[in-house]
Amino acid sequence: MAEQDNANNGAGAQANQQGQKSLQIQRIYVKDFSFESPQSPQVFSQADFRPEFKMNLGNQARQVGEDLYEVVLTVSVEARQDDKPVFLAELHHAGLFTVTGFEKEEADVVLGSFCPAQLYPYAREVITSTVVNGGFPAPQLQPVNFDQLYQRQREQQAGNEAQQGGQA
Image (tube, rainbow, N blue to C red):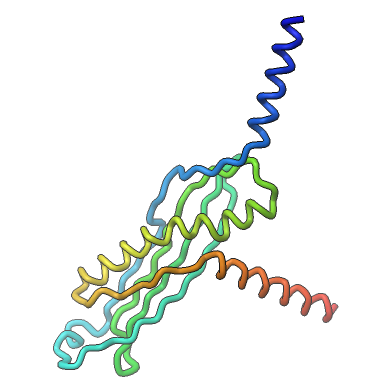
């Protein structure tokens, strides 16, 4: 009888472990990075140097192993003055995340919103320090609401799918 109880307890513990949600950051790293300053050194001699900054964000996730996902946050920062490029920084900052116990829709939210939000502070630091080391003032990269960006992306996808469905 004791053996049967232990077997049942073991099966219950295994079911609990399988039902638990878990998210772990395994590694955060720079996957690709480029910095260009096409107007150097002439740009440094301008008396009224006030570039306009423009930032673009993107992200994608792909499964690379059992419960292991690579999430890549793409950040592009461009500075222009008098409609001329001052610098361009493009970064692909990535992370490996173990994601277990989530339903597909929940996992999509974790990978599309939560994980990029974890990567953003690291990406912001890499870009800011590189721009400063390039001789330029630090861009003020504002905080980003990745939940809102994820929702907007999902709405756009739904709209595109509805539009394609109407054309078929």
